[in-house]
Structures are given as C-alpha cells and as structure tokens.
Image (cartoon, rainbow over all chains, first blue to last red; front, side, top):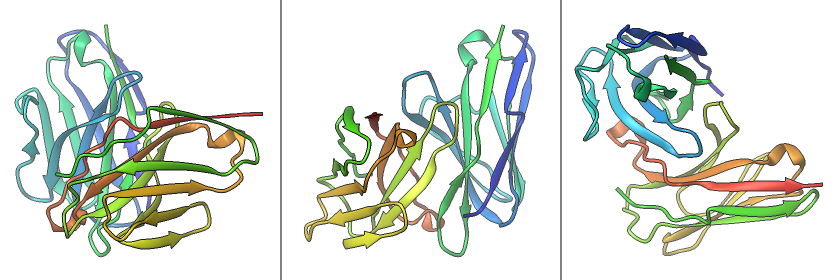
Length: 115
Length: 112
C-alpha cells in the first residue's frame, strides 16, 4: 500500500507554544487528507478534512483558529496546534486519500504532550 | 453517515478463526464497508474493503449479506500479533466527498 509519513512522531512542548505536525504522502498524491485526534482508550475522532488548495472543513466542535490546517500541495498537509494547552495532549493521526482509487492510507501518528 | 455498531471486545486463542460482526442498518447505496486494524500508538492499517457479497485477500475475508445491513470480518487462524483494535467503517468513496467516521471498534485479545 501507499505510504503516509507523519513528523514528528512525538513532541513535548510547554503550554502556550505552537506545534506543527506534518503529514506527507510519500509515493502518491493525496487529493484529500483527514486529520484525527485520539485520546487514550478511545476511538479516532475526525477533526477536519482538507483538500489541496482549499480551506479545510472542520467538524463541529473543533476550533479552526486553534487547529490550523494547511494543504498546500498534493503531498503535504500540516496541522498546527496554536497556543497549546495540556488538554490538547493527544495522539494526532492523518490519512491521505489516493485519488485514483479513493483508498485511504494513514500515517503513523504523532503524540503531543503539552506540559 | 451510516452508524456502525460492533462488540466492544472479543477474546480468542491462537490458531482459531475469529469473526467480528458489524451492524450498519442505515447504510446508503453508495457506501462501501472498510475494516481497519490499529495497534497502540500507531495509525490504523487497512485490512479489507467491500461493497457486497464476499471479498477475500491474503489476510482476511469480508462477508456482506444481500441487504448490506451488516458485515463480518473473518480472520483465519489468528496469532498473538493479531491482538489489536478493529474498526468497521461505512462511507462513500473518499475521493468523492465521503469522509471516514470511526466507531468504537472491537478490541481483540488473542491468548496463547
């Protein structure tokens, strides 16, 4: 299957700082990327859907000014957690859609810990 | 979006066949059924996808009855490494505006 890479895999930051997570489709062009958040022992929660070159569509209850998503190219989407607080500590996962078949491939996830 | 219902947990022993059933009573005509596997602190991994009847690949089989209101993931001869959470998802093809909503998943525990 196709490969989606996330970076960093782990990040620890101080409260109030901003953190950027990158999601790259390594061997295919992802027309659409999904961003999820997962708390311990819980399922994945969809945060937003981004299409290359357009604004992301956020799910209800997700603050678009706090979770900035940029999908500038068909191989890169970024999630920036602005002014992070301890309650933002979570496992963030991206998924890229392979345009031709519509298959969805996930990254390895990024664990954010806000102190 | 079609909601899915799965058992929260299942136990099995090595070498057994495991069948996980998912209910999706309000599945739409355009919806596909996809199963993912997730290990702790990793992203979900695609297992299998189908629309109707039966689909089989090198790791699993997916059985879908004619009314498509449920589906069953079948894992032949499980091993300890199959211990994971399995998610059943229903939705339109993701390159046609569909989006992927995860349900609670089934935590499979394989014992020696």
